Length: 225
Ligand SMILES: C[S@@+](CC[C@H](N)C(=O)[O-])C[C@H]1O[C@@H](n2cnc3c(N)ncnc32)[C@H](O)[C@@H]1O
Image 1 (cartoon, rainbow, N blue to C red):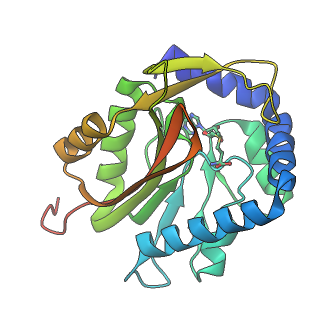
Image 2 (image 1 turned 90 degrees about the horizontal axis):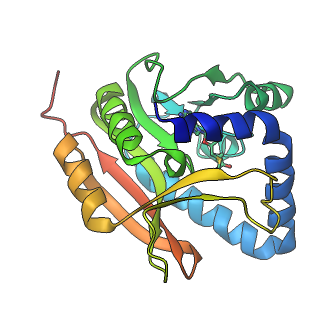
Image 3 (image 1 turned 120 degrees about the vertical axis):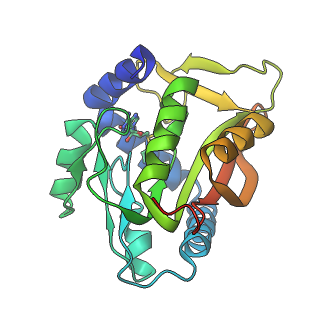
């Protein structure tokens, strides 16, 4: 586990409440836009889960405040949320959720899953951390299982691969977090070298210098272990 990820997790441990308050404030700026984003995410997740029975085994890591659990419930599925900082776990428990303490880099997945989900989480992993995380996700998926996730792409003037950022706006925390940016070819090569079959890759959101890759990949049926 990198010192970059370790330090970023320590920031979240201290600033989980500010992060979630900032996130809520940001969403309230334009409720219509937020509702559209949410509807898009629900469709994206629905697509990722297509064909899976309602009793499919699902796991999320880096759940933050656990907001996306509701989307899975609305789609008729149950997902186990998790996160590494206790601050997020406490917040989720206060909402009535039952999260697991789980660090994608240092903990073993507690089972085999039909789908694994992480949203805005791989952004805080270095290249080596990401390789480790993706391999672990692959191993924890059942044959035919899917990984639904997003990760940042840099397209802007700086064309940086990574940086430490504290945003000025609603997401201001007073401390910098580590962010990793990917190029499409590198990312696809990595996913395929691990064995994943890409099912959907879209680019969108973000701003002029950063875009999100929205990705659904599958572990092929024939790779039975
Ligand atoms: C930007 S927040 C996103 C939270 C939530 N998924 C959302 O979309 O609002 C990044 C999340 O990644 C989690 N995270 C970062 N490194 C992690 C690691 N090594 N293992 C598990 N979670 C991690 C953080 O604790 C935090 O919850």
